[in-house]
Structure formats: C-alpha cells, structure tokens
Image 1 (cartoon, one colour):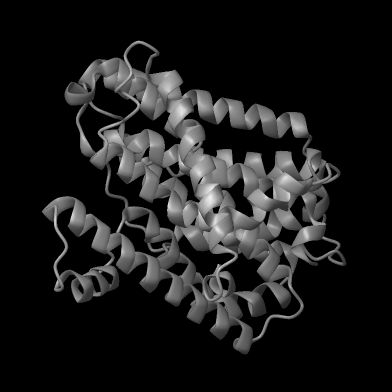
Image 2 (tube, rainbow, N blue to C red):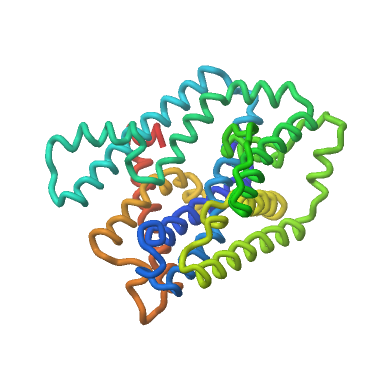
Amino acid sequence: MTRDRINYIEWLRIVCAIAVVGIHITMTQPNNYSVAEIGTCNYLVLTSVYVLIQWAVPVFLMISRNLLLHSHMMSFSKVKKMISRMTVVLLLFGSIFALLEQVFEKKTVELWMLPNSFFLTLQQKSWSHLWYLYVLIGIYVILMPLKKFVDNSSNREICVFTAILVIGNVIVPTINIVFETEIENYMLLTQYVTYVLLGYIIGGLHGDDSDGIKNAISALSGGAWIGLWMLASATKVIIQCLTVMESGKGSALILEDRMFTMIQALSVFCIFKKYMDNVCVKKMAKSISRCSFGIYLIHPFFINLLYKMMKITPTSFPLVGTGVAILLLWFLVFVLSWEVASVMLKISGLKEIL
C-alpha cells in the first residue's frame, strides 16, 4: 500500500495543507486580540472562515496513521526511525522559530538566544503550530501496541474501543462546555489517538471480518457525508456569530470545539474517499502533496513576517474587505510556503527528514 497509489489520500494531503495555512491566516488575530480590538465584523469573518477549515489537522492524523496501521511492514526499528526523524524536525525547526520569536521581540540577535531557543522548544514554547509534532511523537511511541491491537481485534472490538474514546474525548468535554458541568471522565486517553483509530476504521477494517460493520460504513452515501459536513459547519458558524453578537466574545463551544470538528473531519475524509479515489493526481498536485509537511512547517514564518514585521493582516485592507484580504494573504502565504518547501526537499539533510 504505497502512498502514491491512493489518489484520495494525495488529494486529502493537498486540501489539508491548504486548509492549515488558512487556519493560521484567520486565527492569528483572534488568538491575540479581543473582539473590541479587531472589530465585531472582522472577528466574525475571521472566525467563521476558521471554523469551516478546523478539520484540517484531525484529517492529517487520520491520513498518515491510517496508512501506518494498515501497513504490513511496521516494526520497532521503523517506529524508532520515525520517532528520531520527528524529534530532529521538532528540535531543528522549533529552535529556529523560537530564535526568530526572540529576534522579533528584542529587535536584536544575541548569542544567549541560541541555547535558549533549544530549551524553549523542549518546553513547547516555540511557535504554537508545532504542537502537532509533539502529538506525532507521542502517537509514534504507542504505535506498535496500537498496531498489535488492530491486527488482533475484530472490527467490532476496534469500533467499540474507538466509540469509548469518542465518548470520553469528544462528547463528555462538549457536554461540560455546553452545560458548564464538570462530569468526571475516566475514559480520556487522547483525542488524537481517537482520530488515528477513526482513520483506520474509515480507511478499511479487516476485510475477512463478517460482523457487517465495514459494510455499514461503506453504505453511507457521499450525499450523506456532504450533508453532515454542511450541518456541522453551519451549526458552528451560527453558534459563533450569535455568541459574538450577544456577549462580545467568541463561543467557547466553537473555539474549543471537538464534536463538530470530528463530524467535519470524518465527513471530509469520507467524501474524498468516495469521490476522489479515481481522480488522477497530476504533476502540480503531486508536488503539493509531497511538500505538504514542509508547507505545514514553514508557513508560519511568512505569516509572522507579514503580521509582525510588515504589519500586514487581513484587517489592513478596509477597501477590499476582510474576506477578500483573507483569500489574498492565504494564496500568497501558501505559494511562498510551497516554493520554500520545494527548495528544502532538494537540500541534502533536510530532504531526508522532510
């Protein structure tokens, strides 16, 4: 099962890479400024776009871990190499970004900043988008036991365990936010392991298992998944808009959302699996797919350069409007990130880890 043979996976990588750039284009300002500082209209446009693409990272997890759990060549040696590779990527880029953040703040470069950047990365105090790398390393650590579990369990057992994780990591936290309760929850593992198993289930359970679960999943039409995505997305936008208009701040239910985002992620994954598996991946699309990890790593550099150094943000263009400005900056940052990622893949040393 090589990755270049699975067209829908390639298309998912592409759309997720594009969406991740959009997430940080739209949420950098709301994460750092209040509704009053940004303006109600601007805040609503920024966060509404964000909630429509909030599924990107969960889908990334579903993609890659789907392939790993279905792989017949998984071994401790391979997992060790993956952990080592991701640790090198984290420490290298984390230290560079932590150094840049210090330079942006101090307006100078001093020798002490170099070792300090390394220690900041160890403390997860580099640029915030790198949280995904910490998550990946954690998932790699438990990958072999997880692989043993799915290989030696029935489809029903896998689905029941995943359902327990969904209840503990998605539904109970959502109930606590909505009703301001503090329900004790002893089913927590990590919501990201939940996405790993969901990716495995949607990607294809054991073919020789006769319990009917695999057929039930396949029976859902593409139209049903599109409808679910539209319903979840519309609900998120409406709740966010109503909360901002009423209280002057973003909705905790939406900005910390897990349940609707899970529905979006599952829907996107299934829609692409049903409709994009027979769509050929051409040269340019293959390049974007191959560069997707590099795009994820490097795109915040351009966002920080625009927002912090050049003072160019989506709200800097009142004549064209925030919505148009988001699209223009999104396109610019994506193209620049893609070009730089392409160059990085040609550099010896970087090519091996990216």
